[in-house]
Length: 518
Image 1 (cartoon, rainbow, N blue to C red):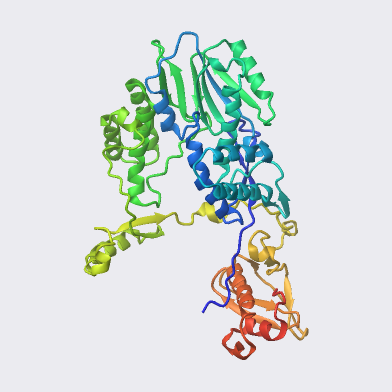
Image 2: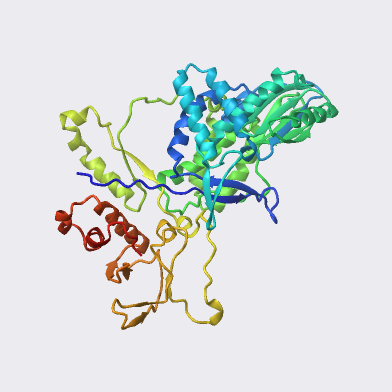
């Protein structure tokens, strides 16, 4: 019988992603509030499930690069047109709650969903927008305007907000809007084919920036070529719209190295995927050949064999570009039936596990019930394992402890990190020594110990001056949280059954009930 169910949430963390492509020396930051595992995370995903179909109905919306290429394929431009890109400045943090909710309500009213469901979505969305609590350093904050960029429903919410604004631009008689012969938008990035003059474009943008939606746009215009997403869009001598791949000046050769510990099938698929991407984006054969030569050099620098590079190139060259532009490949069989998969974190034994499953799979298929459920062969999905980056880099910022480096003495003692749940709740304290329960002896801590330390002997104190000494081979913070959970769960145990409890929860159940463990 389950006596206690503890549900814990992670407080979202604020951090910045530096935009080094804009200013490598003093890069501006993209504000992110990581909401994964937070209180509103599941609700955000629920709302996004219903908002995404509404986004698909927007005339200007493009899903990705492939969608842009499909819209531009075979497009011919008139004489004197201008290529323009617009960018909405700091969109997510500038959306007023009132305008955003009004936009979502408008598009929900155009759907065929029941009114109670529409009302539920609006109320949940309002709750998310007004309860975006996050932490930075050692303080908690409430976002009062805009939406968190890390929320699952944020892109759909922002898309609908701009779609509602676009109704006024093209449906409300905005001056010179008829010159926009093509208007494609990927969230806050907009591509326009402009049929008017430069002065008319400048007046059009000024008028767009005079709005009540708190929207401000910057623009770049060129009669020959512009960059949009990862595409370089230009005009040929025949006035055809041509596309080429675009790499930012700050881009480096970040292809996964061939000697990486990733699954072999993942590494083998990277050259094929990259050459196929080149063939899809490059509208002219000569441009594709030039970019393919550059990509060959990048793959060789990352340790890929000539054979794998040549095989990937030949496959991309022989595939018709029109086929690559299709949203769904007609040669691919799409299976709608759910499949049972073996899911686990990737490790060195992955191929060995695959061999075991394949060897004994026929045994499972001899069972009458499983025969109709299991696929013909085992399907395996590898989760990404914990990397060195995951261990060294954390989005949560905490001020570093003042360490006695200037004294020249080795750092010894117990130190909380200040970022994990055990340290934030005060379960792990900073100390350089500890005293016995009788107070007769004091013991110095001779090593450096933190909440991430493993294979240590630890002690826990109680308000009644009793000390519990334990040993753990795991991280101290993991063992500490287990003690806390055991104490909370012990509150449901009757006093006559306390002998079934472990030492610490039994002591707190009998003597203290809900006292705090340190």
